[in-house]
Length: 250
Image (cartoon, rainbow, N blue to C red):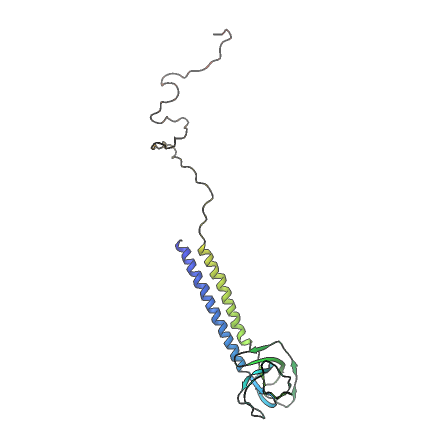
């Protein structure tokens, strides 16, 4: 294997392994970002009026959590502790009032959920907040079990960019590294054209070899090889010329 082939093989292996490692790291970091975004959601326990401070306007999501924990809650009840409903989301009644006490429309929604080591929830409502500030969220249910709803942005958005970057790194490693490995493993194909038989240079005599050496090719107008009598009439004698017989038989 030649030096350029070895260099391509080494470069291909380095690129492939490096991109796979980078993709794995980005994927893990993206998952951690998602878990942190879930933990940062604002939570309102069932049976309480909870004050939520929206720092900006826009669309927010409301999730019903079946597993999680409550810390200090700003509202009319001091519920705290952990809860786990084994994945069974209860029916809830939600009402949200804005900074002026006016009701805010809550639109039914679904299709987004999360499940981390500490929290699990599924999308229940979408709400558009027109004015930042304190809003009061009321959560009611017919169940006696403790649970909460979580409010915020889609936690999957926090990981989306890193996850796509991870996939891009893996694809780039497979393409670039794989190409270098293929080029490095290739060998030059043998020529399919047969070699031409050796011929002496123009004007040179055929070499004399040991017994069994092939005889020289016939020559035209050249002197005979040494050791062989010359062909044709002796020197100084004109060549005989054949003539047809005369009619009288002489």
